[in-house]
Amino acid sequence: MKTSDRLLTQLMMMEGLRLTAYRDAAGVLTIGYGHTKGVREGDKISPFWAQELLQKDIEECERAVKELQVARTEGQLDALTSFAFNLGIGRLKGSTLLKVIREGGSKTAITREFKRWVYAGGKRLRGLELRREWEAKRFFE
Image 1 (tube, rainbow, N blue to C red):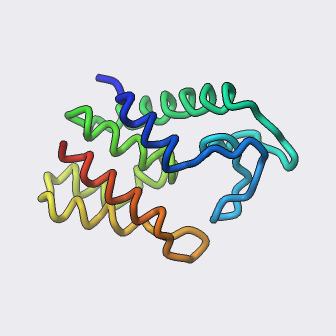
Image 2: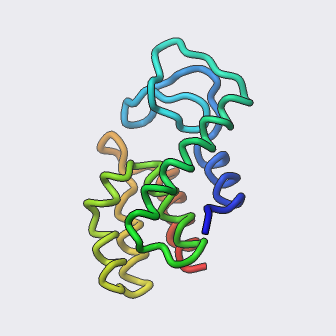
């Protein structure tokens, strides 16, 4: 099982493309479609390399999510990979979301756990609300 092209398209839309390094809502240096590793102030990137980095980042997150052995469907893999891409695999591993999934929680309980993760830099962000809604919906598809 692999993440879908639907996830790639959704991440490109949710992250947006920025060709010059910037600080995201949490203050992390970011470039392209949400790439953060090794980014320095003033870095610039082409659209081609932005998409290449996104694909590499997705593959890395996908591998880490698969190691958790909780994704049983492509929708679950997409949702959890999106979550890990946004917040980091460490946060997913330590989350009550993962605990509820492992315990076989209800759709309501799992959806509620996704929707708790809507803050960045101490502020509730509409973009994160929309992202968590998409992830919760995709998890059950």
